[in-house]
Image 1 (spheres, one colour):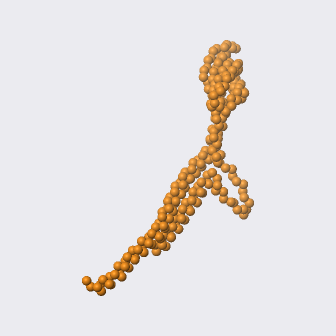
Image 2: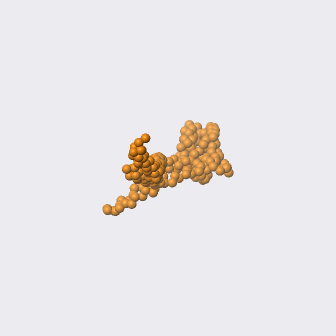
Image 3: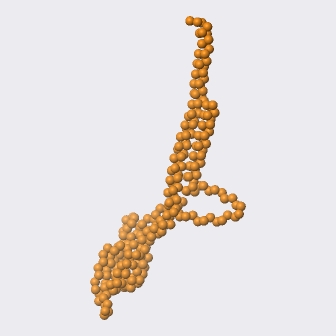
Length: 245
């Protein structure tokens, strides 16, 4: 073997080995940390994007609740009037008397029963006797059907009671029950219907952004987090590109 050729090859081999070692050192101490930081920033970006999507869904749901809040409030008032939390017998008796007067029948007797002691929605038995002509009795039953306080008719008996010439008087006994003890509907925080229009600001006044409401707060927080994650990802990619260059 030619000693001169071996002598010339040895520096080339050493240069290759040195290059490989330097490449490994560069990958270990420069590329690997930057790559891990870049991966972490991308994971954060994906997580915050998912949070933003969830916040957007909540925003849509809250906007829907705010839009139908007036209808829900009206329905809640009807339910509270139909089966109030307390028995409110005095008000119910007055309403039955008013219905009898409106229908043109004579309320001969009204006997409310005893309210049960069980918690929750409970019936109050009521028995009443009225007299009048056939159409007046039917109108009285219609008044019970359309009254704001719910009255459930359990039984009805009618009998001829005689009357003035040319008219047929009827006596009717109505058994039924009222309902009470309906719990009020829970109030959704921050959803109480459309917000009133703000007072006009004077010319040139600066309006400070709120951004911390029930609806806007989570969405703004998620958007800020996504922006921060995007910035971290861009910074990590720039550092990686600079290191690689």
